[in-house]
Length: 183
Image (cartoon, rainbow, N blue to C red; front, side, top):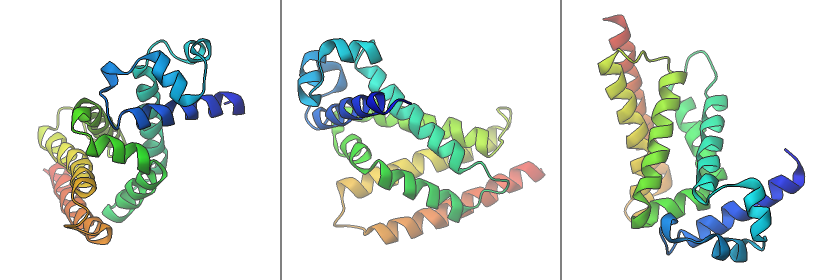
């Protein structure tokens, strides 16, 4: 991607997440987003048709990061958690904004759905394997919800304990998933 395009899309993404702190995505106007980003409306429309396309790009970028990072033969809990942690930390402000803002449930749901779909592919779970789908959904939604809880209640659990709990839960679920493949 051209460096100018990267810079512009980053400005727009950062401005969107800043505005999401206090507003729902549906109530953000292109004018206020462009003002916040320091980008003119024409530039916005060169890159996007509507504001939600920025979030779609963000979500798709996360999906690509997860897919690339998990493109290994045997995914274990430690590797999965390391990937989540690295992606979380590189997108920390975006995740935090989404997680602590009650009005952004639909966007968190989209991220959970993306993670679920990506994990189905990476873990090679067949759509017909209902039990496997439940396990992968539990992992995807559980991990995202644990971060939501942590962002909302940082005084209750420190990040290292959160990671250890997630590692234990993911390991147990990956073992369950292996068992469903044997049956």
